[in-house]
Amino acid sequence: MKTNSFKARLKARQQQIGIWSMLASCNVLEVLTQSSYDWVLIDSEHAPNDVPMVLEQLRTVAQGDMPALVRPVVNDTIIIKRMLDIGAQTLIIPMVDTADDARRAVAAMRYPPLGIRGVSAGTRANRYGRDADYFAQVDNETCLVVQIESAAGLGNIEEIAAVDGVDALFVGPSDLAAALGHLGDNKHPDVQKQIHAARERCHAAGKPIGILMPDAELAAEYTRSGFDFVAITTDITLLRSGAEAALRNLAESTRQGV
Image (cartoon, rainbow, N blue to C red; front, side, top):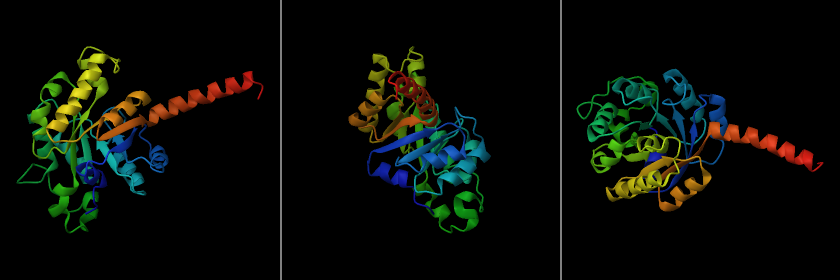
């Protein structure tokens, strides 16, 4: 079975810098994975990705060495099974508010008797039956990250982190800001206080923690403060900012007579 390099570095507590893909495009992922990021996230919660589209994007990522994380649309046993069967090794599960939510995700990730994942002898995950060690190694090479993005999730961090099978936690800053009464204001001091407290509490519980933050100043702060994996931009952010920068550069060059 293919080694999960993201999980291996996570266990070694090597900080990893990632990029978030929401454009649901194999071409975009092909461009992104030719860069030097440590990981890329394929989103299907807030992006128009269904299972066949994620499959094709995983095939694109597999042309290189960059590990792909996948965020399913919801913490659902069937959806998790399908994402694992098409070859996703690391899943970020959104809206995990309680230890029971986390246990449900763990059960969906594991085969019986440890869990409830349905068994197929021939999927892309086991190279259509060619990986004879797949069932013996799958728990070692799959990685479960649960997302904390509500007041309830904040309150239950220690209990969630203690669930066997949860490899890491992840802060969703936009939903967290909304839950704390600051919709659209991730920089609010109350939000930032809770984000850093979540990092400290998670580390005290012995688990790595990650975050997504396209704001360069905040991303640098989170990196310096010890978040274990940080997505510092998204493909949408890069496209939008690049398009706007090209217009600004033209206007500036025109004014200078260049």
